[in-house]
Image 1 (cartoon, rainbow, N blue to C red):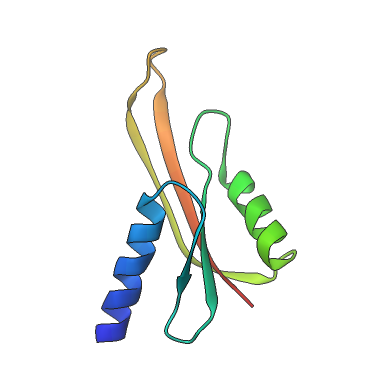
Image 2 (image 1 turned 180 degrees about the vertical axis):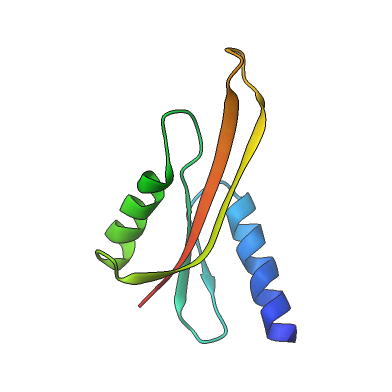
Length: 88
């Protein structure tokens, strides 16, 4: 239970950094966080980055976080997206 909480906190800390970072999971699997936030970007941008890091489909999705933030100057809602994967 304690390791699960520590892993969860580590993943959230990495996701909030806004860039790719590595976190060690308890099983020593390499876990990476990818940011694909912003206008004109989508989940495909994150999966492309994961494919480049781990090999095509050489990863397991650990977490997928996305939420809308307030309006930008053009009135559109900004979307923040992060994808956490564990390379196989």
